[in-house]
Length: 234
Image (cartoon, one colour):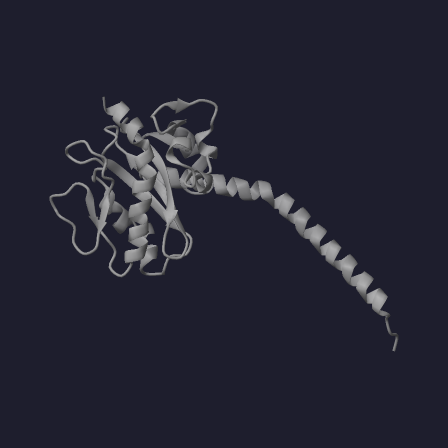
């Protein structure tokens, strides 16, 4: 039986490692445009879902072009920032910045009933990983028209229920300002919320940490828009 020297085995192994690494790197480069497109389409679908427009991977781009008529970025003073594409703002980076340095994207939806909704991206931390989504406000910049939430690993049957329509529907018609015009966001109440409150929704039984994270996310991500919202109300 033919034997191989240690040198041969080492050289052969090194060449194979380099070859496999090159193949994987090339595959990743070739797949990157497709991955970016899929991410873009998923983002479009989620924005549309917040204004109750259902879409698929095949029609998301055309529906987005039809119903999302405008997008822009504002700062914490409520002023529009020129030269920044709202769609390309990375919320992972923005949530780490001080409020005065944040780029705050806004997407304007115009549905078939000719009513406008203003869609705000949100991102925070759940029990096991990131939670994120979009909140659509009516043109009073106070009343929630719709929401769309997602997560990266919340407990099945518990925290993961933040993605379900029955939970997200609880936010419709709720308000992020108090009757006195003070920003309060939305309280997600353990147990039963106060029926007379416009700023509360019922939580999810058994998922306190996830819903606490969702409550913090809404407050932390909507608060920097306060100046913009109030400017539009005046």
